[in-house]
Amino acid sequence: MSAIKEIAEMHILSNCAARYYLFSILLLFLPPSGVVAEADTPPLPETPDPKLQSRLALGLGQMGLSRAVDEERLSVALVDITDSTRPHLAAVNSDLMMYSASLPKIAILFGAYQRIEDGMLKHTKELKQDMTDMIRHSSNSAATRVLNLVGPEYLNRLLQSARYRLYDVRHQGGLWVGKPYGKSPAYQRDPLHSISHGATVWQVARFYYLLENGKLVSPRASREMKSILARPAIHHKFVGGLLATHPDASIYRKSGTWRTYHSDSAIVERNGRRYIAVALANDARAGDWLRKLIVVMDDIIFTQNYASLTTD
View 1 (cartoon, rainbow, N blue to C red):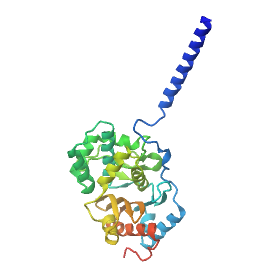
View 2: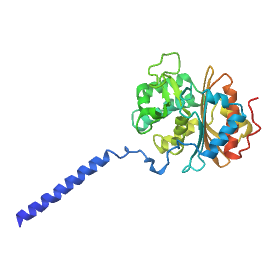
View 3: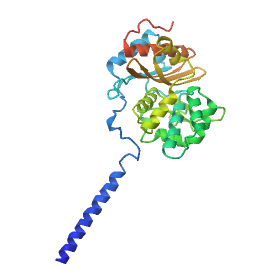
View 4: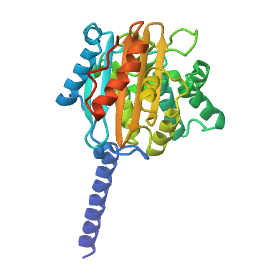
């Protein structure tokens, strides 16, 4: 009887070891501690919604911007996220990576919060002030200080990571920071286009979509990043255009300007609706384009009444 008992106990131990081994293997495929699984949030669509797409194309045409789109001097993304479980996308030149000036400072903000979440960076008052100045006032010196704390090479590894894929060769690039904001030379231009500060409208829209759904770093970090994006101090482009017509709008925004390159990006909340708007352009007139374009995009989301707006 003792031999039978010993065999039975060995069998139980063997089964326990097997279960432990399987459990250990499964752990390799689970999200890291503190990471929210993305199963409850659908991914941002890659295929445009036909109705929204036709309205955006019509609006751009009526603004006289179709040629700029065809010549790849303008890319635009518009995402209706009023129902976060059913995002609707419209975009032109969605995977066209362009020089984006200060807009990729949102990537530095994201990198700082990831470092904070991982316990590698202290969330001090000084850091919070630098992050706020970097976003709201677009301070280059503050951006460079935060970038140095985050680690330039680390940031671009994070942007390319399997968890986030905010720079993805399958989408011709995305968000990239390969140079300090100042006179220092580039340290790591993006691998596909050799751009120092770059973005695509689809990946910027995806950044805001993850942020809005609490998927960027963590729900708490996403809320804090969104609060820093609020109350922009520079009132031009999207902010100037939208607040002139709808002063009740809440705008969470980051823009960029360098020579003929103009960019803007925002989450807009107004009258019960929410949407993401992103535009990148290379033209001396593009600042004015973007100021008027945001009004067109807002009208598309709300009323479809945008026929009277032109760039003349």
